[in-house]
Amino acid sequence: MYEGLSSEILNRALPDGLGLRVVSGFARDGRGCLSGQLDCMVVRGEGEKLPYTDSYVWHVKDIIAVIEVKKNLHSAELRDAFAQLKTVSAIEHSYYQSEDEELDDPDRNMAPSARTFSEMTGRIVRDVEGPTALPYEEEAIFHALLLEQVSAIRVILGMHGFKSERAFRSSMVDYLEQNIGKKGFGPTGFPQLIISGSYSLVKTNGRPFMAPLVDGWWPFYFSTSANPLRLLLEFVWTRLDEMYGFGRELWGEDLEVEVGRTLLSFRAARVDGRRGWQVRSHEFGDGALSEIPVTEQWCPEFIGKEEFVLLMRLCEGKEVRYDDTEILSWLESRGMEFNDVCNRLLQTRLVAFSGQSLKLITQKCQLAILPTGEYVAAENSTGRLDRWISRRIEGLRECDSGEGLA
Image (cartoon, rainbow, N blue to C red; front, side, top):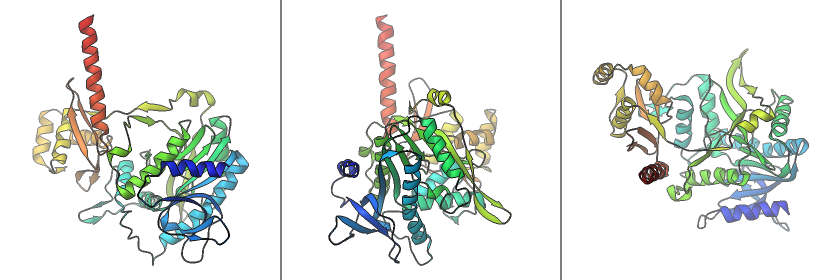
């Protein structure tokens, strides 16, 4: 019943005309490897129906999402579902990392991963001159993001579960501590979303949620009490948007964002000649968790005039370089240091460094000067900035009208 309900919800959420289906069955890699039996898969293309059953076998490259459904999700069920989804990630990783496999799927270009990497690190991974040389710690992150982009979205969906967010978090940390050092427990081995009743654990792989590095650590998993079905749809729709390009019509107002409570951070490291991931857990008491809001209103980046001018140059296709004497002289006349202005621009996650230059990393960066004289900038590929400005101006008009009546 719960598997059927989950399939029905997903079927209703999928856009028409794309040939997408929701099935149950197995994932295969074309080399004889097969996953365990899977409750629910969102797929495209053609699969193989198993005789005398309602189950299918589907190639991993055509699986968009895999959902493991549980009536109740507590510690034992969490471990069981995690292990089941690992059978999918294992054959995916083997398939996508094989030397004879070419990732030539036109629906899955690597630009989203490159953009997420730049947002996280402040560095461009590839420019017109070719790939950028990265230290091992950053190269491992970029490789993980690429694998996340092409792999299926893996979800554990528990209809009922832990009575508190803290208990859910503790169960995951305990499970991880029991498996430290084992294969499959790095960032790409974790499901993108784990739902236990009213609480969820969410991966920040840039689609849709992103977290910048903190002192080299990737805040990779967070918990939240936000609507779990909304989180599930955001993961699925983000993937479909990347593959099929729905544009701004898909996202509605999109002016409210989830606030995550960091649970796990990862950092790539080399220790005694071995490469791997170091992990750090973040503990919060029940009181501290309850003090963190579940959502907050989105707003663009408020910037100074100097940042506004440099961003405008970038939007016009001009260069912003460390050695540009015209820019350096103008900033000096305003009592500003180039490094300080660049650091503030990097914090907007709209630009990143490529050698000695700043480059835009957005799909559609747009700037505005508000009626209050404030400067703002944001990614506006979905029209989010336009909607925010409309609300802001409407609010200012209401304030003015109220003052007049007073």
